[in-house]
Amino acid sequence: MTRSLVITDCDEVLMHMVVPFAQWVDEEHGVIFRMEDTSFAGALKRKECGTPLEAAEVWPLLDGFFRTEMPRQYPIPGALSAMAEIARHADIVVLTNVGPDHQAARMAQLAALGLDAPVIGSRGGKGEPVRALIEERRPPVAVFIDDLANHHHSVAIEAPDVWRLHMVGEPAIADKIPAARHAHARIDDWAAAQDWILARLAEKAPAPAPEAV
Image 1 (tube, rainbow, N blue to C red):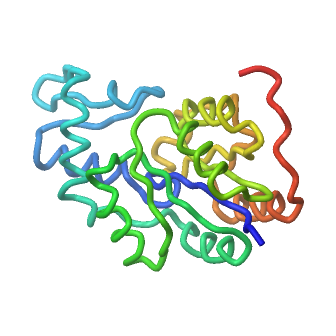
Image 2 (tube, rainbow, N blue to C red; image 1 turned 180 degrees about the vertical axis):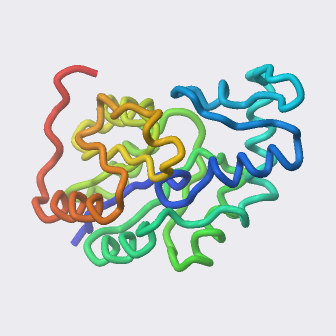
């Protein structure tokens, strides 16, 4: 019988990212990361003069971090134990926007922590890869977890039957990010999130159709 499916992001859902990233760009690049609104790129400023980085400078920093600094990352409290419990009831796939270049490293990073799950290193909106997973696996119920509102919007369009949980597990930025309008719930704590996810899996009912996307 086809199992239910949980599709989860990694950074700020399973693993802390912005705090170790901020430490690294400060130490190695003379850049301060201080998030004052929802803009990640706008949070990066040169330490010597305070001017924001250009948009074209941001991805090379992120790419450099994921290429060499993943060992700085550490789990969000409760994430791994929640994944272990959820795995008793559903298959887990990690869908992360680190891109194909860092997919293998991300899988190894999580496997070393005891989470042996397939990893898809995507780019852009997550709606299409979520829809592809649903079409491939045909789960009785599916749950999507991510910290970014645009991905919930994308999934609401491409796979509206999937339950969508907005989670920002990093306290340093959680209060800067409003609840995603296209998610069914916003929970930043893994104990409560685990209960919510297991309840959706037990119900085995598709998510209600969004009023507008």
